[in-house]
Length: 257
Ligand code: BMP
Image 1: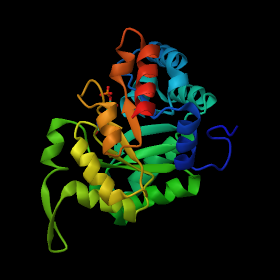
Image 2: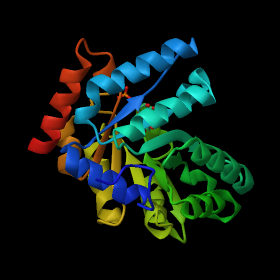
Image 3: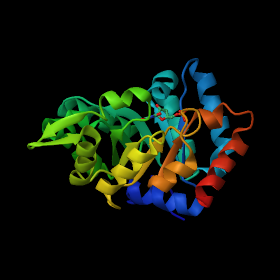
Image 4: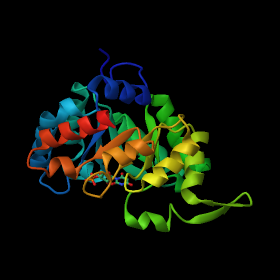
């Protein structure tokens, strides 16, 4: 069996393979929201130990890296790789190109397999250098297309004029995800109708990563029915009394849907 990070397998192929092998579409969001670092690391490792049979990947928030520090984050990534999971860093990169490239390369050196970026930065001297760095390293870039929280309507949902036509902002981002050959698009599970509309633009070319299941009100069934490929789930697993059972339940729901 191929192991994450050990060969030339691309991020996108890796997560699809692991999802298939594990019969799960769940990416565990490990959000270490406070210190101390030692406690955060043991909590994260314990969570992975309990839930790993029911996952296909892991996503760490930027706060996890800040609270654990680099060395402990690298230990956590190694542990996740031992279970074959691709690791996504959720830093929603959104700066000038040189800075985006430098941040991306630093995360890739730590062992992350993919990075989430914000298409608001644009391509030229924006996200292009990040995509180039990712491709050189065999890593993935996932773009935000429509976030899951209520305020996302103010930006991702607004109408914008582009090339003489009015379109909703998220449609332009989904088009960019296709044009830039992104490895994924984040679309909140809280708005299944938007997942459906994004899927129409993305076709089968860009997989949809959907956060917002459970605590934020989205459901596995609705998100998958609308066209999501992967579900990013955090608190509904790790705040549950029995994280193993919760992860198993989400995996079952995703297979049944
Ligand atoms: P939870 O299942 O606990 O709501 O966590 C969802 C995770 O996905 C969090 O790490 C959050 O930062 C992230 N996320 C999100 O909730 N909505 C988005 O639109 C994009 C995200 O990355």
